Length: 100
Image (cartoon, one colour):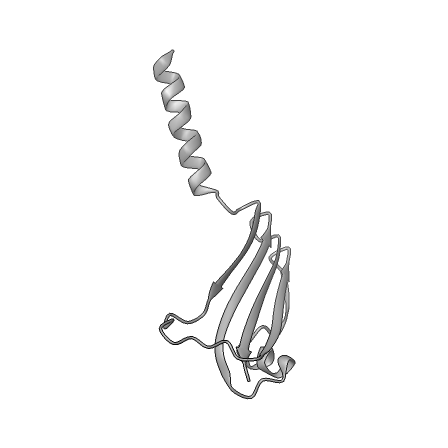
């Protein structure tokens, strides 16, 4: 009986690691990797693209669109935000540009 319980716990841990973020995910990460002298600037702009039912996608989530939306002429740093529900049934990817 203890062996079955131990195997069940191992399977649950494995599934939780494998499926983490599949039901709901809302994360933000940098697009760049050079952080020694990162300056964000005084302006922020965002641009998003969307997807529904894995069939329909629309929007311009590029860095250029984010900079234009924020009135940024010089991009100093950029992040990306990912919001997803139910294995990507609905998802939104946003680029955040920082600069002057």
